[in-house]
Image 1 (cartoon, rainbow, N blue to C red):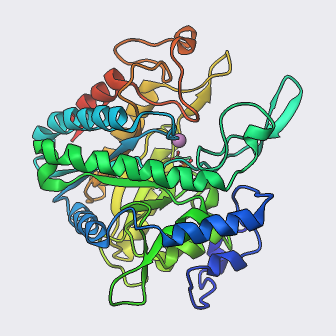
Image 2: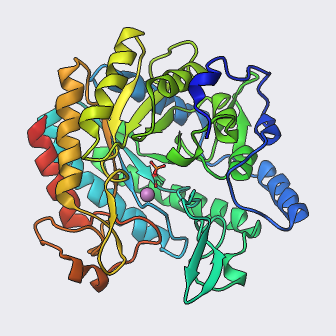
Length: 407
Ligand code: PEP
Ligand code: CO
């Protein structure tokens, strides 16, 4: 992986909606039926947008205010959405949990808290391991319900273009239910409720990109905001190419391998005009590394007077495997990273603009610790995640309560 730093000028050829396709190495599923994929993409292009540009602008405005500490962005949801989850039930429980978290945070923050779900599109996963081996059988890894299925069977693990349509329809149902819920939930009436996901599956994102009225620019109608994941941030990345021309607010996951030059290059590529509200840095260094790795990024941003919304994902840098092989995270490590994030960001004279969590309202046993004191032996009791371990409702509320005391 070549460092972006050596490419600070980047390739400034003209951006087009499909210019990402000319990149040599595109991370993503391998589709064997390319003709079918093309047909499905064409179909999606003809579908109505999932979210409207006016709502995207509203969130962008909130991002601008969050850079100045006038708004707080609470982003949370599943690691990988399961399309079998009933939309109505899922929306109801997600909104209820967001409502409780907002009520808990409100007194400490005293600014509007804007809910952004990892929802209605978080169903494509970039995986570290391309294959999974079980009992000597090697199959492609699960890559999210938009690509293949979790079942460990050869035909179920093939990337199926039809699942793009399935995903679109599911996202539409979730959005319909969200609209209804927002209307009846007084907390969300003022702010709205927004959707987000990692912009990983570029055929889906391109097909749902729409022209912004009266301009030549595009936004993706797949969500209000999208982010660049840790695994697609590399030299000559197709994902960076696609996202640089997409006008939604963007997140950049910043893990421990992010150098100052990578960081500055990405900001230059995505936000050459240094417009506040365009970029959220989602810090996910891990509790062991944040103290060393975050301050240089904050200093560089200050040196160049860059407008960044500083958020923290205390989940992805703290993933470990239990002795029984469960992917898990320790509540205390998650909390420690958040605590250090707050003191480092505030210590550098910046605002804590948001947090980014993986959670569910269900009483799962995926993360260790918390008030229920979940232990390694408990993980198997109700481990339901298709991908990364989520905080359950009790752990999520406890985290928010503890976090509010750091502010
Ligand atoms: C995620 O958000 O689910 C994820 C995979 O994060 P990251 O790209 O930061 O590892
Ligand atoms: Co995850």
